[in-house]
Length: 248
Ligand code: NAP
Image (cartoon, rainbow, N blue to C red; front, top):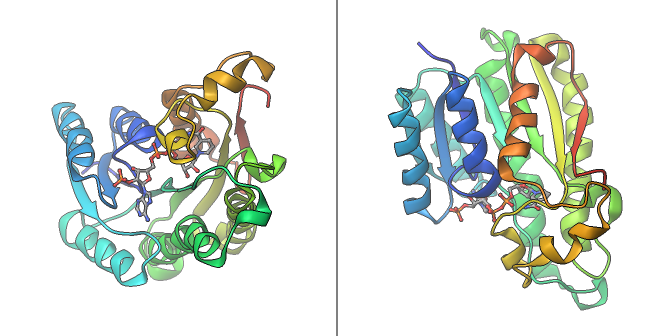
């Protein structure tokens, strides 16, 4: 049986590209989504057309009961879990810090920080040699924003990715002797619908000339970096950060 990879937020953008890339690399895929069933089903159909198995599972990664239910469905349907890609993430309208409020900040942290924590907790129980399993791989999708801070745009989002970076470091050290590698990609300006959530759909094109590589990135280019960190080609790499940001 093929190994199984769970991609959170796998229905759109970087998550969809990652689901398809990992399917190409031979994985059966669990496509998690929160609200866009149609997009998730489309990705699953493409995975099935490649000859792999695919499952679509609704869950809000920031809600513990949803995450536990998602993993129970994985236990029943897949019987194993080898890879977790913590890709699901959100941001809100571009605003200076002075205009933020607790409701918004907490929502960003719930999805972008609590979510990956919860997904890691359940993944460890299904991967760790201490739990009788064969090991596995976790890849966190952070952002160049964790280094830059995203001033006047979304410092709350940038801070959430800073926390995800720290989760990567701490967890990688905690589970290194349990057969689990934990690594991180930090995308830069990638063409997805996320920028519309920030109120500026054309943000990548506005900023691309400032980048050393002078262009925005494609979701498939992030997926390729994730696929490397998932693969045995990176078997000696854990706790690492791979910048996929055009030199940003
Ligand atoms: P996107 O196109 O907006 O897609 C976001 C995905 O996350 C969607 O599939 C969405 O599900 C899912 N999602 C959102 N909240 C969720 C929740 N609570 N539970 C489960 N799934 C949830 O975004 P993207 O650009 O591909 O971003 C993917 C990741 O890359 C994010 O972590 C983002 O921070 C990071 N990133 C993106 C960029 C960029 O330039 N695009 C740069 C750096 C980092 P539905 O389809 O159901 O709505």
